[in-house]
Length: 357
Image 1 (cartoon, rainbow, N blue to C red):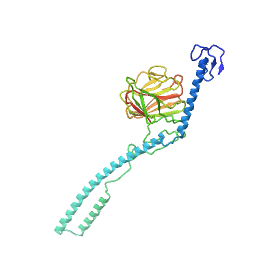
Image 2: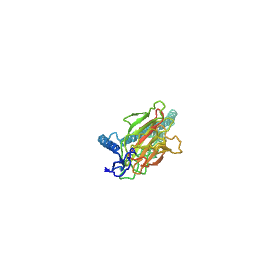
Image 3: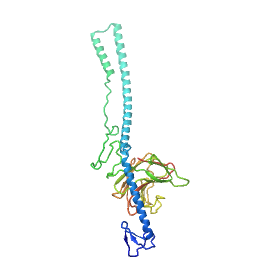
Image 4: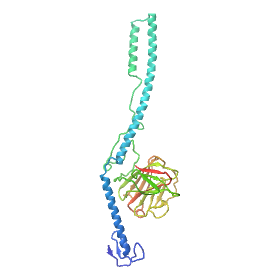
């Protein structure tokens, strides 16, 4: 801090004379608000320290529940289910062919047996007939043992084959899929360089469960819905947060970010200076708390998966809808929505439920 010789007004109250300038924000403050400003900086310092303590705690936890391992488990289960289903179909097909072969063989055996009986009764047979009947008997036994009209072949068509899982080091490879081709849904030209375990934190009119990974809307009285905030703060790097829509009513959902330096958000699209950027559903953008014109589609449905990408380096966010293979993007004015960012979600109907994957 340095003393101010001119009569610049206090940046807080705008009336009293500023007596000191903060070297960090370069604003002048009066005596009272100078102390207040330092207290605010101390609180922010404590918050940063707590975030580092939480990061250290997360690093010390076991990795068995890591989302990447969970994705491998999902791939394994889906592959096992697909193999079981394919095997059941193949067994049914083979059994059907075997049953038909048995019927055909039984008919041939009956026919040959009747021929032998007729020849015996009429004493009309020779060594040539014996040879023919023996050869026929051997053919029937061979057909019963290994049906010539049944074969098993591998089908490597994409829609029926089981794809191999592949793991890439994103810092050393330009390949984007982590699991291919079973799960190859999010194709981004940028590779996430930091991975944080996100979860829900503060909320209004919502119930959090499953270690704060699931949020369910329970509005009171005539409340317009539930606003839920993320736990992590983002100031650098690229971060993907995946959601699954567990349940959705007739109203649209909102996904986006806001600045944790700003005041808490009371209404997403109120037009107030609340630093919110994002989308209602996927086609109606909100920029600095103001909903833009156009976009009234209802695209996101129950069971859908979406990915919200925070690209702090490029100062933009993206929303990707996996089922529709559709992606939208917004550039963010950091003067209106300064770092650090936090995610914000709004559920509008009673019982609406989303889960962070």
